[in-house]
Length: 289
Image (cartoon, rainbow, N blue to C red; front, side, top):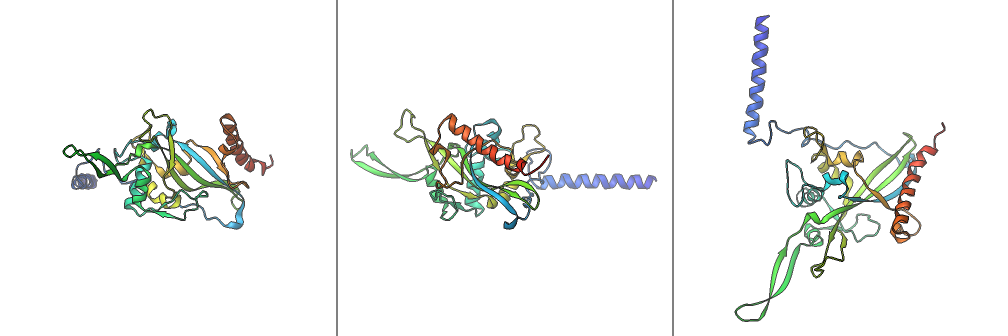
């Protein structure tokens, strides 16, 4: 019995030493253990869906405002910072486009059908970067000279996102479900000549096909206010609907016109809530109690 206990103690000490040695070999840790769970995650595949099983469907466009409290984990860390393996949603998208082969699509298509692919240089240009020219007076000659400089981008300008999704009823599983199709960051900015900053501008930057985003989302942490040891991922946030948004457009006979094209202010908000209620009431109306 004593020999068995001694062997178990030796095995535990050996395993502990191996873990410590592995952590030392990995370099300096920003903590007390090596993070392996989130970086190795893959997205959980959706259930297979046949066209014959879709009894009803509706295209919906939503607006996500990152200034709402529940959406703050999508906005921070602000700027281009990476803190504790976390980065903002826009920085993650830009990283994917530049380094992971993620495709960005031109937002000029009104129906967002992901047809025209953009280069990373075009993406930076829409964010206010790229090359620019200015006329500067030469202090020695007094003549105006043309100077070319590269403008920097400011990811913090992205404070909203537009999201295209499909709501449908699957009669095979008897559930009302939603699948995100694409996401588009929206930049808020003022023109350089608007000194008083009275006329805020909004610009769609690019569209990204959501299924292409999921592998990157699944292995990137998002801040959890209640537990640093159990971080969510971007894929958790969007698949589990842990964000706030409002409906701004649905597919309709008028060329998919937006709610703001026929309602403003309080009326637009009430129209958005009416559409939301219609979608959720659809499932309830199919059952008898």
